[in-house]
Amino acid sequence: DHRDLHLSIRRQRQMCIRDSNFYLRKKRPGEEIDIKTLPKAAQERFLGPNGSRVKEWKAVQALDSNGMPPIRIFRGKEAQKLRKQFPNRFVPSRWHEKWKDFGDGHDNGLNLPEVPKHVDAKSRWILQGFHDPDIHLLNRWVPTPATSDVPLAMQMTASIKARAWIADVRSAFAQGIKGQRAKRLFATPPPGGIPGEDDDIVIEILAELYGVITGPPSLEEECDHHTCRAWI
Image 1 (tube, rainbow, N blue to C red):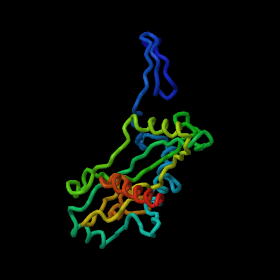
Image 2: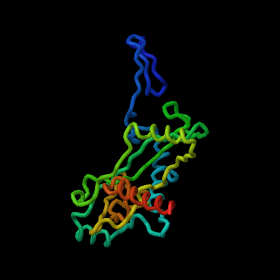
Image 3: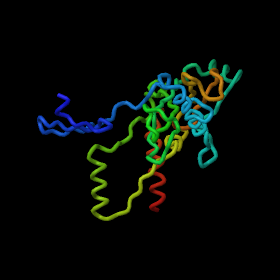
Image 4: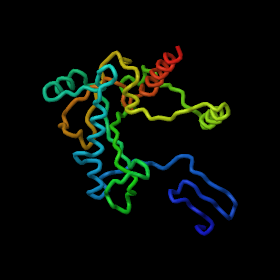
């Protein structure tokens, strides 16, 4: 009965007066959106010349601290040659897109009732790692915090009055340990294409990008390495 429910604006919490229970959604519903269903102005935030896909593709190509690129692009005859030489070393890719919350001070300028002004377009180019030809050979294990670990760590930090910082790592997996494969790996362009590129390009994967099965363990190992160096 809807009269017995008080729902939050974002529908993540609800209180049922009838049975005196409070419900909290542990996992948010899927955030991924189909940009084809959006109004033209909203689509431009993803597909336009200054859109999120262009920004993501620039980030993907950014050099690491050693001046090494995470990908290498082949075109024309070079791309055709690689397809024939390595027919079983390709994984498909796709775009993952959503509205990202940029905070109350942000204004996307869309003035659309269905798109709050504090959110804006976010695109991520990801590889479909379950097609990885080396999936049976590589390390796929990485420890993750249990539900109770995070609040326990926060309580311990507060109890000893320690300082703590929270930060986001840009293009995180691309900064993981490289060179874990004995053979070269390539990707095909995603549906919808790559900004400024033809659909017949070949993309060689030189780093652990999003979607690659070795991404999480390589990043963890790299973080452990830098953490140990900081304490020596």
